[in-house]
Image 1 (cartoon, rainbow, N blue to C red):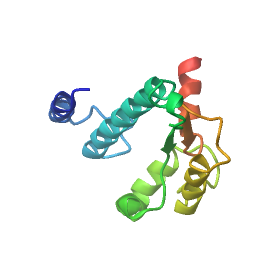
Image 2 (tube, rainbow, N blue to C red; image 1 turned 90 degrees about the horizontal axis):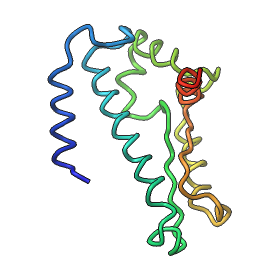
Image 3 (cartoon, one colour; image 1 turned 90 degrees about the vertical axis):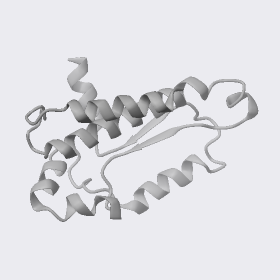
Image 4 (cartoon, rainbow, N blue to C red; image 1 turned 120 degrees about the vertical axis):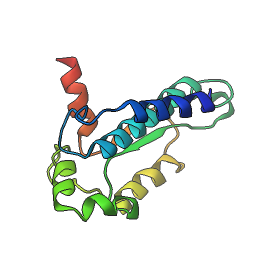
Length: 144
């Protein structure tokens, strides 16, 4: 709950990254740093969702709260990566589900629409990964 502190920590992490720190060596260091910071922000949001969803203020008030962790989708924000054959191939290699890269915006829209629909009366405090299996691959590596 310290936004200025979080911004300062992210800036420091960005400034302290040295060329060659990139573990994958497939992405430019600046892009890897941006992805690392983006991932940290997503993790913070997921932790917050899990912590507050079952509370009286949310669940007790009948408010459903979930997070949807989307993978790489074909949106204007992704144009930089999708327009580069090298970057596109690097990002595609991260997705284990054949045919899932890049995701289509209408796929994400359908999932989000269900999450806020009356049909969803039971699911709260969950993180839904719609990422072609990237998170499952990461977790499999941690569980081994």
